[in-house]
Amino acid sequence: MGFEAAEAAEYVPVLYQTFWALIPPLVAIILALITKEVYSSLFAGVIVGGLIYSYSYTSPYVNPVMSLNHIFKDGLIKQLSDEGHVGILIFLVFLGIIVAMMNKAGGSAAFGEWASKRVHSRRSAMLATTLLGCLIFIDDYFNCLTVGSVMRPVTDKEKISRAKLAYLIDATAAPVCIIAPISSWAAAVSDFAPEGTNGIMLFIRAIPYNYYALLSILMIVCLSIFKIDYGPMKRHELNAINGDLFTVEPTERRTNDQVTGKGKVVDLVVPVIMLILFCVIGMIYTGGFFEGKSFIDAFAVCDASVGLAYGAFGGIVFMLLFYIVRGVLKFTDCMSCVESGFKAMVPPIAILTLAWTLKAMTDSLGADKFVAALVMKEGFQNLNWAMPAIVFLIACGLSFATGTSWGTFGILIPITLNAFPLQSGNPLAIICMSACMAGAVCGDHCSPISDTTIMSSAGAQCNHIAHVSTQLPYALTAAAVSFVAYLFAGILQIFVPAYGINSTISLVVGLGLMIAIMFLLSKLLPTPESKDLQQDAAKETLKAEKG
Image (cartoon, rainbow, N blue to C red; front, side):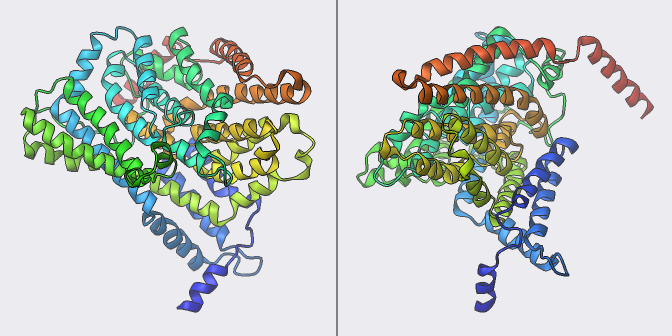
């Protein structure tokens, strides 16, 4: 038994640290976009990863037993036994229960009615969703599910498509967290800071150069104010105006509990505020705040998954007491939400599990080392002026293929700071580090196997592939403009050193370019007109009659 374990530990795949390591996620992504079905696509990528892992140059070329062991034992089972992953799954289940309790108590309906009296247009509904997304900056998972559950009644009333709601959630989840010093993302990034460096201060210095995050937030504001839509999103928005909020039905549309309580706005607002408070307390508790560490230091080393699970449990206990004392719900009514809340989270849990397993396949094939070796190639050394833009592109590609921002941070930030040491005073160090963070968020934003993208679909109760396909043109627009902004920043720093680097100038240039591109794309890209929608409706009616 010991010999077999040692042998397994020493095993190195023949195709380790080659381009083949990126094939499994690419298979999953391409299949998902083609078939519009995420579960089978993710599992197909996992199977391909297992086959590549056992490949050899001699017959039999693939060892089926090794592949199965790797897929299930090293993949699915190992990922579901990981402490961090289990913490996230528990957090999701608890949030599902919380949302079910809010709905059953009537808090969500009361808030929707209250907001509908104050939000009188699609523009104001989108801006309100954006504002709430920016205010909930503690964690992206928490952001996605909270904003979705709170704002769905408002956006539904104003006939905003679920795809647009999912995009608004996604664009104010990771992009907000990556520029918020007090967030689980700041803690993750600071953990990769060189020894002897204050990670949080390094994170703060990088914020002004995080062009993708800043431009993504500004982009949704511009889309809302100027009422711009293009690409597949235009189709979804036209359908929503005509009464169809979904266009593509979710894999499992969540069934809300029947409202039994006479809840008021306070029955949603107070629990949400307490939930945020409990989550913050839970995170700093895991970081040692109550053992004498400062708030910032405790946040920098916190275990976000465990802290969020603690916080969500505290939120459930508070809501249970709050609703019973107020006479809004009975104890039995609250307990009935446990099952419905768990059921509501089954689809995102299944997708997350498969996405984590797919990442395990790429890790076992050395995808991180392949990308690291690519970054360190000598050919890049003479392109200092373009390095921020190059790092941004590499981070985008790696994060897109693996579906993880934090994993991309862990790979690229140490490499970047090794190439541009902070101690040398080279200003490109901060810019390139920020480009790495921005690219990681961009790839994560675009990837259908990203956990944040999955959570955004769950929060909006939107078909996952519909969310990915409608969001992609917008994310690519912000990515292209960010690439230009990083080129501009690098050129200024190298060729005009007397003026230094001005992040504000680069951001303003990027914003102007982005607005121009959005207006241009809205005019040039083909989008369905109302007559196309009528034709499609007629076809569907004819199809139903024949059926």
